[in-house]
Length: 167
Image (cartoon, rainbow, N blue to C red):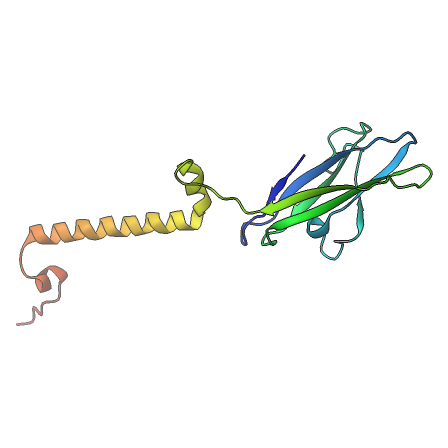
């Protein structure tokens, strides 16, 4: 059972999760639904969403009694504990009582650079890495230029081509 879902940072795009519920009833289950709160499509946070048991849309195996729903975790959602409600409806249109309530924590991924430096570097994002690489290249280039200028000798104006050679 999922106890936490990682919320992507703004700019990282959305993440897809598949939530599953194994539902049984002495009467035949016709539909399983979930009320997904912040994980539901925008504007449908209190609406019961139909889950699938047809081998499509995130469901692994058709007709196995395991109902699934794909949820899109939007970037920038607040980190908090949310309640997800699930219910089954049988052939007599009776909903399961009680409704299954699952607490899920929306969290941002925290990486400890001391225990996992590789993941910490990945967590910095490609933008920071590119900036550090470019900064390093510029610094090495500047260092090489200074060494060449010192070895050539002459005044700084001559080395930079700032002298006036008109006579």
